[in-house]
Length: 598
Ligand SMILES: *[C@@H]1O[C@H](CO)[C@@H](O)[C@H](O)[C@H]1NC(C)=O
Ligand SMILES: *[C@@H]1O[C@H](CO)[C@@H](O)[C@H](O)[C@H]1NC(C)=O
Image 1 (spheres, helix red, strand yellow):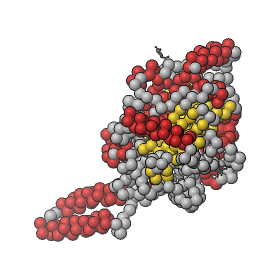
Image 2 (tube, rainbow, N blue to C red; image 1 turned 90 degrees about the horizontal axis):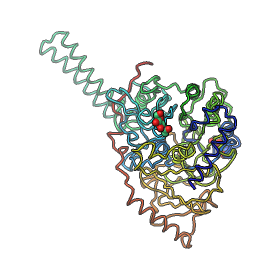
Image 3 (spheres, rainbow, N blue to C red; image 1 turned 120 degrees about the horizontal axis):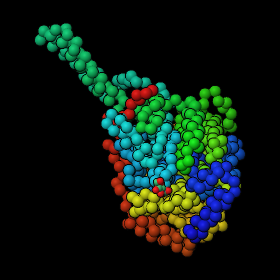
């Protein structure tokens, strides 16, 4: 079958070469370009072409009308860092520790100066394509670690993972970025500040007393007072802004979180701090337009990764933009996101790159159901009828996302594929479609790495008619396995070995911008590995009717999957994740990059 794909691809390529290609001979000879557009926290129910008739996403809808729409497209994790790592490497993040285990509260990389990052021996799509002589660029959010040196010198995160250029956000947008927050904090109700006040009083009194007794000059007194205050200032700073019990994610205050992490990088240097949220979406789109204009002048193929800042919290829009969606602030953000996708797609066309560029659009995970703004307005996505959302281990709502592949003249326009696919399929699929060698040949160090994604080139070209392939997907919560999906014949089985405890009558866990359902711990999670729940999503897509454990089908499938799970656990090594090491995750003052040009 592989050979079949290659042959049909070859004939498609020859056909394009023979018909008048807008790029002429040059364009037809070189492999296709790739543009990946990744949304953040976009619910599958937030998109027009996935059934939302009150929100306007004309650009995404057009992409689907001209390409292949995947209706059963799955993220490897319901959180940014692990999901993005999986998409870029085609491997479960648990294999290389870019997920927390149950010990730590943090679920993503919280600081630019956290030590944890995507390990350098993992091979990303960018690294692979660079090895195939592509020019590569990342515009937008990275969130896979920055590798800063002492004093935040040279923080080449994406540049160490195959990208020639980077302009964007090193971590993610956090709610705290919408400042300002108070710097001067002195809360006398807290013991830390009480101790400080007492120490200050004691030092001043002792100095005054000592001056008298020891007959110090005024100069000595002033010098010692200044010194004491300098030392006390450092203690105050740490009391007010640093410490594992601080308000913001992983050990810093809201003020410090914004001051340290709200940054835009160009290459390995900070160029904006704090991030001006108003108009950020347009600035990123304009940057990608510039990048595409440069690519168009070059005869090398390119990979542009446009990683959107929308629709993660906090909500923001361009200043003076008419806010006209029917769904409040969140709807406005969706529509602005779609507009910026339009800018990037239009640039592709304007520079004559459309026909030779494969476009892939998806979201890193499902909508964040619990998110509300300070004024109580909902600012999280909508996952259609799928249950659950972002941050939840196995439930469909957190991992079933929009997915569209478009390549004019090569992939059918307006096609729909219902067969389960994964974000992790991107790398093998693109290498296959582009007629490039497999990963292990392009990057020899990747030869011994097991990929969890697989090429879906055949599905994209022939749709669900292509011969069914048995496939198993694993759904993790952090490092733990919560569910398995088995695609077999016409069936799509999903077996849960752990479930989330939702609030009664809902599929979520409360309200709050930083609230999510944790998928571990007794409060949120129930271990049901002794009596797994089994669904057949081919006729029960919203997981309403678990299969009766008494029937043969249940017994057969559950036994098969439990056996698979046992073998997986005994043969696949999940290292102790660096993301669960406090010292690696916390804010490291000596790695903090500073803004020298802004
Ligand atoms: C469309 O999206 C909005 C915003 O998330 C949501 O509130 C609404 O329920 C969705 N409508 C449908 C029909 O899915
Ligand atoms: C990349 O370019 C080099 C030097 O021009 C060439 O030897 C190599 O075969 C190219 N690699 C691919 C995958 O085309």
